[in-house]
Length: 182
Image (cartoon, rainbow, N blue to C red):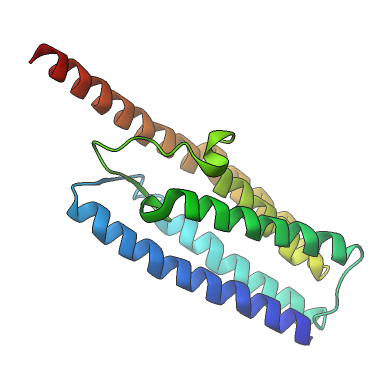
């Protein structure tokens, strides 16, 4: 139960720190004229994550915090996701956020994992939502929240982000046209 309690507590604390970092970045970006997209679905993302942690706490407690079969593989997968998370976050720097916020006049970040993958942080989240519960044999949590997260990402979040990036691209193209006409 100790390993379970410590690991889940670390992840929850990590998420809370990330929310503070995101809020600071949001405040700076909006002060610079940034525009938020997809704000209507954001509460559902927050709810999904809150319910995920409640579910893993309940199921993990029922399982007495015991590790499940293959737990070490899932733990390594989870650690790899954490490395990718830090890399993605560091690559975006002050532009990293839990919301979809676009700052006109800025270029799309294309360094770090973003050179190769369009949405690396979504891969990280999907990996975590599956791997963390599987460390502790919390199959219900792993299955239900992997499916809910995939549906939310595929049908809501990624399309909203693509719309925001398209708007950024159009704004950049319009800016180039107006500069070339001057």
